[in-house]
Image (cartoon, rainbow, N blue to C red):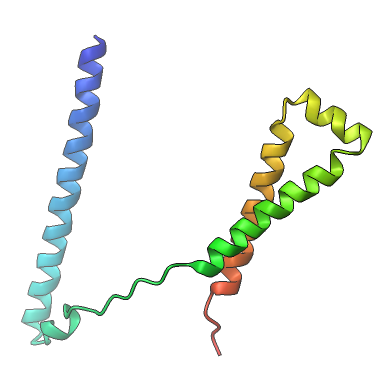
Length: 119
């Protein structure tokens, strides 16, 4: 029974990939035919665009800074007896939560810093 479920899951996955690809091609063909019927220039729409990969150094730097800030804050706060008890009680999960919190906050900040301004 377990093998049958696994087979059905894989079959469903491959069927969804195939039908997604099929309907994408069908929609693209209909779009092209509609453009040809209206005598539009298709070459401008489907021209190859120049792609330049830019590594997100700013976002990566802000993420690392946020995680480091969270770690530093936990180190300073772990000296406080009540917070030290919380860290001991949660088996260090509070440290992980603080790192993820500050990492997430830094990613949000990086998104807004890196966003191009609309003037």
